[in-house]
Image (tube, rainbow, N blue to C red; front, top):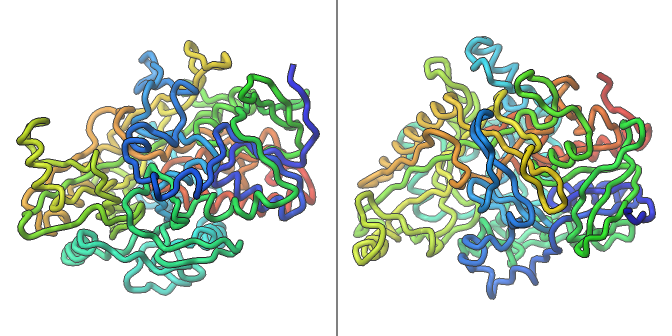
Length: 592
């Protein structure tokens, strides 16, 4: 039987970006908050000091910062007719483990979604007609608009010290920024990062083809910065060890470098690490959360009572806890009913590798940061006419080479032997003169009736709970989109002066072993209709009003941008609603 702890005002499950943001906001309101995190405590100067952090084998190959499948994994299949099997080694995505969550290892791309991304179903239907969309596509409007979230995007960017160039300042289009972005209320807190040679060459080639390139918005500091909480960040050193790695320089925005130094000093905040929450507890009516149950490292079970529960874990774990706790109606893809597990999505990513004359080009790829790059937005969202193309969606593309780490940055031209003296010679000859984007094309992944999450009927975890089952595959719409965007991207690489361009287009089935991003979205989505969404516009559960669910699990579909900026903005948006509305009158903030 679980041992009962003293009651708290708020229990937060997960201490990554969203858990940290909401905890800081609610402790400012005077509430007594506890955060419960499955993974270990992680601190910037002690866990990833510059003396050993640049270790590709440890962090990229052996996955030091990530959850071990032996601890917890998922099962995967492409089609409902197939038997799902457990994932034994992470490939397509990397579930994080520990305080800071994905904010520790991310590259720090900090985008705002396009205004049309929030009303995508309405926008596309009005422009192209309902029959233009695939019959099995289940995209929905978010229930909030860009204008709703703009102040909160601003909050997150200034917390992070985001480096960038505004393209739309209060409706005025500015040269050098993204002309397609929604209007922002003020400039980025920091100027863009300095761009290496290959990135500036890409921008020149893109301009020559009629595009308007701009620097990728970056949570890597272009200069020393003090955020609104008084936390100081240092300028990026362009070491090239950012994605998959922590940052001991305090030059990459993360919970550890922006918000936790303030939060952990508050007397009304506490945290428990290496504790696995196994259930959100509800009362007899099933309409009110009473707290959470968790298991510590010794296997002892504890109950943490709370008046308010914030679910702030990774996308799939949010959905898992809701299903395990019997909260919300599970999604049935055959009947197309239910909400928990619905509209699960990922991304559609591809590259084009450019091989250049080594006598004329030296790109020094090891000089880089996690979110450095010059990109274009002409093929994102609905910034281009989809009518003649037969698909919807899109993405940004650019030269965003984020490092030249020695183990994996060994691209060689087609026809090169895979090992031996000739392979070594080709690596040597091409290392400095090859353009190898990390994600050259970063495309959307829209939602479908047969792409979803549910509980596996066969496989169980170490606690005897069913594993989460992923049913996911690419559809024709995403494959057409990716082929079109990859061709456009390859044209720019060729215009840079490449002798040879090798396209790596997405084809066939979704491959769980081939890394794309860790941007899994959906499964507990927000919306305006409780029959097709789990959450209302404030990320509050329709069924359990004192339970709020943070993160990308709320996205009804995934846009062509990295999701973290929107995840942060939604956390601030929801926290403001809790502070200004819910605490004054606890109950539903939206009535169906």
